[in-house]
Amino acid sequence: MAILGIETSCDETAAALVTDEGEILANVVASQAELHARFGGVVPEVASRRHLELVTPVVSRALTEADATLDEIGAVAVTTHPGLIGALLVGVSAAKALAWARRLPLHPVNHLHGHVASLYLQPTDLQPPFTCLLASGGHTMLLDVQSRGGYRMLGTTLDDAAGEAFDKGARLLGLGYPGGKEIDALAKQGDPAAYDFPVAKVGGLDFSFSGLKTALLYRVRELDPGELARRRADLAASYQRAIVRALVERVRATGAERVAVVGGVAANSELRAALPEATLAPLPLCTDNAAMIASAARYTDPVPYPEYLSLDARATA
Ligand code: KG4
Ligand code: ZN
Image: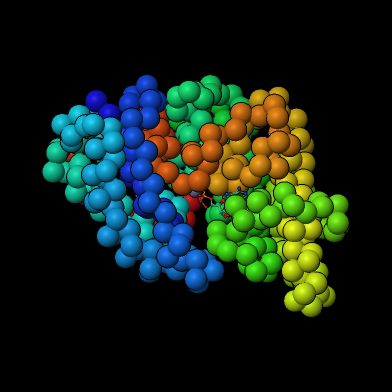
C-alpha cells in the first residue's frame, strides 16, 4: 500500500505516491511559475483557480506513473498549513473527497515538516538527530530535529525569507520569476567580490534579509540602464554571496556537527558548495513537491474516516 500525497500550498500543484518505506513511486509537479511570471510573483486567486484545474489531472498522472490504481492507496496526505489559504483549500478539498470516497484515513501535513521529511525519502533516508536549515520562499529557519515526527525551532527570519530575498533581488535586477534560479545562473558569470553587500547582525540564531534587499536597491538606482546591463552579473554574484554567507554563518553558529539543508533555496549551487559536509535535499525535492508531504505523513497520526470532513486549512504555521 502507498500513501498518496497532495500539495497545493503555493504555485505548484503536486501529487506523489510514496511507500511506507519511503520509496518514491511517482512524483508529479505542475509548476504555475510561467502563469505568474508576468506579474513578477504569485497572484493568490490566479493560483487557486489553476490548482482547481490541475489537481485531478495531476493525481491521475501520479497514479499512472506509479502504474497503480486507487486500490493500492492506503492513506491520503495533504498540506493543510501554512500557505495561501485559497490554494491550500483546493488540495484539502481534493484530498478529503478522495479519502472519503475510498474510506481511507487522511493525514493533515504541515508544509514545513514536509520540507524536513524530504530527507527521509530513499535513498537519503537521514536519521535524526541533526540540525536543519530550512530556506524557502516563505520561510527561513534553523531547526533542531531529534525525531522524524517533528522539530524544535532554534531561529527564524525577522523579516524576509531567503527565497523572498532572491525573488525580490531578481526583480530589482530585471530578471524573471522565480528569481532564485535566475540569480543562481547569472551569478556564475559575475564577480562575487565586486560589491560588498551587508550580512545583517541580528542576535541569536535569527536571520534578516530586508536590509540586504534595500542595499541592492540603492546600488541599482545608482546605475543607468546601460551600466546596469554591464554590471548585472556582478550584482547577482555579490548579492547571492551575501545571502549564502548569512545562511552559512548561522548554520556554523549552531555548532552542530550533523547539518541538513532543505527548501527551495537548498537548490542554490553556491549554498550547496558552501556546505560540503551537510546532507542536502536532492534537487527535485528542494522546491515544493508532494513526495515530501507523503513522507511526512509516515510520521504523523492520520485522522480516521470520516472525521476529517470537518478538517480545515490554515494560512499560518
Ligand atoms: O520551497 P519552495 O518551492 O516554496 C516555498 O515553500 O516557499 O521555495 C521557493 C523558493 C523561491 O523563492 C525560489 O526563488 C527559491 O526557492 N529557489 C532558489 C533556487 N531555486 C529555487 N533560490 C536560490 N537558488 C536556486 N537555485
Ligand atoms: Zn515549500
